[in-house]
Length: 127
Image 1 (cartoon, rainbow, N blue to C red):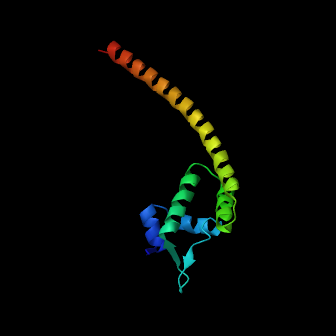
Image 2: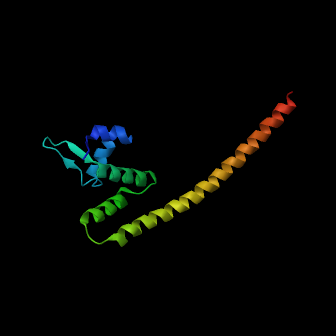
Image 3: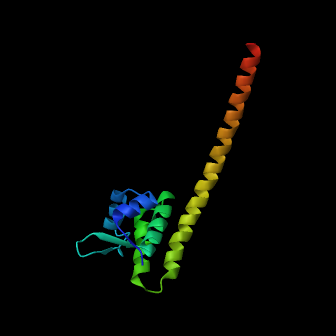
C-alpha cells in the first residue's frame, strides 16, 4: 500500500499543503492517519477523497455541506439518501449556474462579433 507525505500529495495533486491542512482542520479529512512522529500519512483512498473534496469545492460547494457529506460517510450508518440529497441540491445549483454562464457566454460572443465587424469597417475606411 502506497503512503504519501503532505508534500508529496501537494505536489501530485497541485493543492497547496496549507489548503490540505485547512481541509483537515475543518473536518473534511477526518480519516488522515499520522505516523509515530505526528506527520500526516496519506493513502490512495485519501487521495480519492481529496480529489472529490477539491472538485466539489471548485464548483462552489460550501465547507459546511462538504463536512456534512463526509461526516455522514464516516459515520458508517445507512444514510445514503441524506448524502444523495446534498449532492442533488448541489447539482441543481450547478445547473442553474451553467444556464447563467451559457447566457453570459452568448452575450460575450455577440459583443466580440460586433467588435470584429467594427474593426473590419474601420480598416476598410482607412485604406
